[in-house]
Length: 268
Image (tube, rainbow, N blue to C red; front, side, top):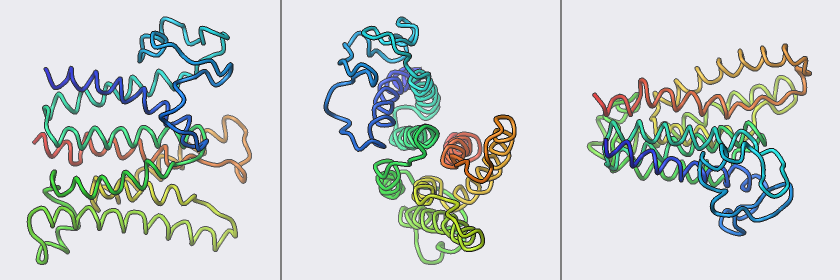
């Protein structure tokens, strides 16, 4: 119970910070200064108008100063982070494992919404996330993965876990890069951004090789199906519409971690 409460509060605070990152990082703005401001009127947001979830509801999604609409994304990110953190910390307790998976969830949320809004996957999330996943694999080890089949005779203990994470990061990102390279060669145009490749390094570093492969297959299928339906319903140009693949990869990775992957394995 205590873990869930701490996770809920932490999720609200982290979600609020993620909203800052999602808006500022693609624009190469500092996430520290200046203080939070309205993108429309540029006025500084007072502390009591910046309380996660509560302020959005009290203000009815409008800026107090100019009345401009506050994107629904702000509410969704805070609620999603709070729910995921509360569940994870409630199940795993106040442990290093809970910290690792809450960090993974935060990274995926940031990437999901950055790609959805701006079609950008910031390096701060991708490169920083991949490094964090590799380091944490030493302290919160993965008990099993496809990489264990190849590395088991060579590595033991936490270094086997590190090898699994490294193999997942390298092959997960490498396979997606290869798919993009083949597509570009056949169609003579870029089909995937390099941000998606770096994002798969994050997924592989946290979920291992098996998680990276599952994310790649299921996320690509979901993105293709939903993307085609969206293009058909909105009558967008199939040739020019840029699908936010990172959004689908991130959502799939979170689902796998919670339902069939490392978080679920830790619970068992």
